[in-house]
Structures are given as structure tokens and as C-alpha cells.
Image 1 (cartoon, helix red, strand yellow):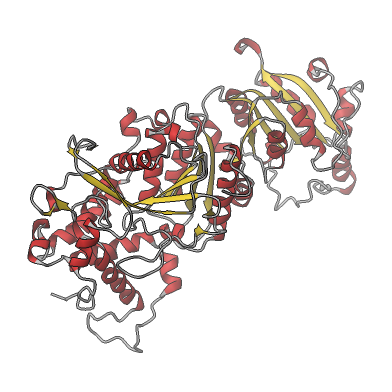
Image 2 (tube, rainbow over the protein chains, first blue to last red):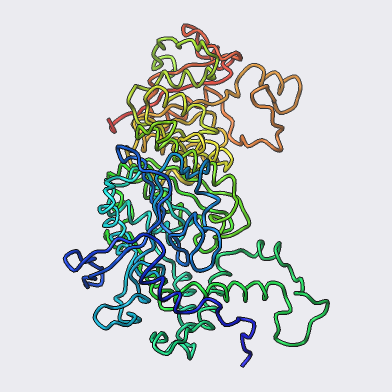
Length: 400
Length: 222
């Protein structure tokens, strides 16, 4: 077989990942057996823990808290150095002093989702019943389960109402679930590049990724940790396929075109002749260093199951009936994973529910990942929306 | 003529001492009761919505142009990107107290269904539009022999977004046809001043540069 020989063996050791899963660098809130997480699959998960990061300070009347919900392959390390990769936080462009999510004004929280691998309980965490990692014994989790766990975390932090819940992609799904499940706890919501349900095409891409992981002989039916292996080739392929869906034809063309990688002529082999191949291999190999393969299976599954309308007899507007939350829905023109049409369907439902909603489609050729990039129009809209929400909530204009 | 019979006197427009708002916007705002819930269809960059919100009115907007929407959202207004021709059908009946269509009717593909939708979604509608019966328009066509262009409508025939021009008289006929009641009607002259009310309708149709109408559902619909 053509080896993915240029997907190098991970430089971060699986022990480091395993340690981070149980004993994260982040603060952790632990829930004992008396406080189980009631999962949609019918299982009570207990004990469990949630790892989180905060930025800025909570004001005296606890009215300036903003929850960031992270996307599939991200984590709670929004605006600090990542403990495994040593790289900058994934949303530093958005979160910080003077940034749209201004840490001088707001108290920002981001927790690792349940099922994740950066310190919240998930398949990479140790199962107290066996003393080994959960692996596939971990129960199937859903987007509502993630949100339920976040609500328990906020209870523990003493925060009743959030000024805003914001997130893109899978994070946007959590934002919508927050408004559907706990409307009275969400003053405003900023779902970005997302949908109220996962489309057939998106489920198909996820299935491709999962099959790639499971086809890797190092996967061992999810018990690779017992053999000190990690299905990094399968997971890298899953990441490569996923990454293509996060970009766009135009973005790939602009970035790489048909340019060759460190060579003038084709090698007439299956080497990474093209820059785009080299880039994808790099994306794959750097991802497997920090992410657990089983976690990828669980989180993609959670997204596949997501369908808010299904819980309301198929009528999306019913999910938001009488809601007081202020919405700002944002989509990007070149996002084909969560195209504008999906956001528009959400906006129609919100209109039908008489919700206060803004909707902006932002012109960019950078695809789904635009929400993570330097897109000034998106920053301006987010900033203004948060400011008007803060004003409506009586937040002191000068901070604190 | 229906217009004269139905049009009620307007209480007068509050003078805009700051000069911050357009006269036609002030006139529209005057027609809307305090505390109402309002949808502004074709809200541009949100100038009218800002005026309404400053008066304690719960305003929402739809705007076709992406730039317009994004400017509105950046002002903290609740505005969605959408098309009057295709998106009004998605709003439920009686969702708003008023639906405003300000200087947009002439740019819709299907003015009649749009107008019908306005009064389905809102209990009342406020519609303003440029009057193609305005004397300057007539003169340009009659004497100049070319499609009229004015200060407020500077586009040439081949690049104008305005594809369904009408006169005040035409509009009144359409309202009659679809059983819409005119509660108030005001014609504004070239300087945005109301044309005196005691003049006959053809004077409005001649000297009104734009018409502003407060409409409600007529007939059996209560």
C-alpha cells in the first residue's frame, strides 16, 4: 500500500495525552456519584469531570459571563498556550483585552465538551470501574448532553444567566441547544456557521472519518491504549478529509493552486508532489498528536445525532416558542459544510417564533473555517451584537 | 376618489431640530404608535429603525444587501438578510403591529403579493414610494423624451433596481383592488414637505414627489 509515510509518528507521546485527559492543566470541576450527568442514551454518567478555562473577571452581579462552545476538534484553550502543542489559543484573534470578546469587560468561560480528550470525561479518561481508559465502553453522548454538563458547570461556578453563548460549527450547535433547553439562562446567543441539524452530506463525511480510524490496524476496536499504540494513520486521514470540508475550492486554489512542493517537476511517484498534499499531510499529523481517536468517533457521532426540530415534532419554530433570547446568526458565503441556507432556515424559524434575531451572511472565500480566521466584518458584528446585548442587560458601559 | 375620502388629516410632523433624520422617516415614525412591534422591510442601513428604537418601538428589519445588513447588525439592530419578494411568506400572520415598506415597493418583482403579505404579517402597514406621476417625471418623458431621472432617483433605465414604478393614483387603485383600507395618506413634495391636504387628489399625484400611506386590512377581515 502507498504508505502515508509523510504522516510522521507523533512527537507528543500518548502518555502525555492520557495524562491530560485525567489530570488536565486546566481547572476541573468534579461531580460525584450523587450528581450524575443524565445522558440522552439513558445512562447516568457518574462520576465525571469538566475541565474549563476562564478569562477576565466576573462582575459583582454576575451579569457579564459569556460561554464559548468549542468546535469538534478544538478545546477549552481559547486564549492561552495549549498544554500539549505549545501553540497559541485557537481564538486569540477574538478573545482578549480590546478584542470583540473583550476580557476587560466580560468574563469568558470555555469548557472541554463531555466526550472530549482535554480533561473533561471522555473515552480517553480512566473508567473508575476498570482503572483503564473507557474506550468504546464510554456511553454515546449527544450535543444536549454536552450542554447539560456545561449547565452543571455553571451551577457550580454560581452563574445563573449568561450574557451570551457563542460558538461556531459544533459550538454553534451547542449554542442553539442552550437556547432550546435553557432559554431563561441565555440572554443572547451567537451561533456561527452551524445548523439546527446535521445534513446527510455531513453525516457521510463523518462516517468516512470514522471508518478511516476503525480501518487502522492500530485501532484495536478502540483499545489501542492497552497496546501503547494510537491509530494515528487512520485519524490523520479522517482529519485530512475533514479539513477539506472546512475549506473551499477557492481558498485551496488561492493558497496552493497546482504548485509543487520543494520541486520543479513531478516525481512520478505517490510522494507529496503538490503543496496541497503536503499541507493536508501536515494537518493530519499535527492533529493526531493532540487528539484522541476514540474521542473523534464520539464527537462526530454527537454532531450526527443533532436535530433540534426532531425533539419538537419536526417543527423547528416550536423549539424557540416565546423565547426572549436575542439572536445573532452568522454564516459565510463559501461555507459548504454549513451553508447559508441552513442558517436561513434557522432564522425563518426564529422569526416565526417572534424571536429578536439578526442574521448576517459574510462574504469570504475561506470556507467553513472562516469563523476562526481574521475576518474583520465578523469581528465588527460580534462586537456590536455583544455591546447591544450588554446595554440591554444594563451592563456598565465602561467595564467590570 | 377613494384617496380623498379615506385619507385622514395628519397631525403634523414633529420638526426635526437636529436634522438627524430624513423627513419621510420622521413622517413614517409619526404614523406608528408607541410600544408597537415593527418590521421594516428593506431597511437599508437601519436609519429608520434607529429612529424607531429611539422612540421605544421594538423594531426588526429585513434587508437585501449584505452590506446594509452588516451595517445594521453592527449598530446593534435586529436585522436579517432577506428578500421582500421571497422571504415575507415565511413570517406568520399577525407577527407585527406594523410592517414598513419604505422606498422599496418599486424595487420588488411582485408588488401586489408583497403588499398582501405586509398586511398579513402586520395588522397595519406603512408604505412609502416615489411617485412616478410627479410633474418632473412627466415633463422629462413628455418634453425630454427620455426615461425620467431625479435627485432621489438618479439611476439610468438600464441599471436601476426600480422595476415597478407607479403613481400615487396607481397605488390607490391597487389598494382598492386588494381590499386594503387607507387610514392616512400624505404626499411629500420635492423638499420632503407634505402637500397641503385640502387640495384635490390630482394635485397630489402631480406635485407629490413621494407618497406615504398608512394601511390596514379592509372589508370582512376586520
